[in-house]
Length: 206
Image (tube, rainbow, N blue to C red; front, side, top):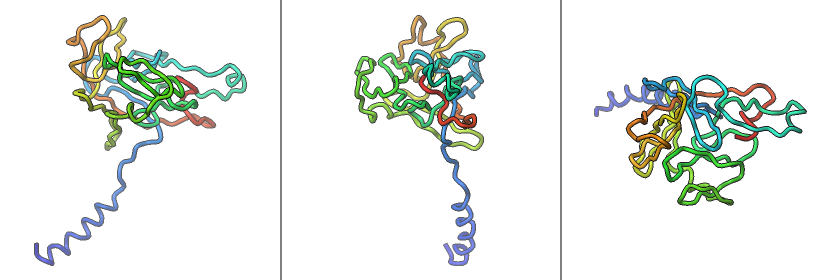
């Protein structure tokens, strides 16, 4: 490259490096952004599993009565992540993992060990749970992804009454009561989530 050409490119490179890079938000919720029967459905946590349903009320959360009396309970209405592998709850340690059936699940507060059969024990090695889950920044919104152990992305498998259970997209998945062919791969859009005033997490405990 000629010196003059190199010098003319430098201002462009400097401008490119100065552009703001997309950052992972402090917390985000997840919605299906790919076309299909589950498009625009929101991810919801209940009984340690993850679901895609229609309408409100699918997220299952808890706040102690004494905290509720003081009016200090977080909303607890939406399933929100504070990073790619942790739920956004006041009580720490609700880590997202994949069980032996390839279902996406979350531990209870302060639980940090998962056995080979998918059961949760205390204490856990957090490093064993985080592999595969990633947040990928984008122009309008990010994407929540999973890639590990032969799985690539997520899929939704019919459960009952137009409710789908979330699994990683793996040929080893074992959906409850349905064939693997009934499952639908999907793209999980990750959208920045804003908390109401005077709250520090989306739920006390999921």
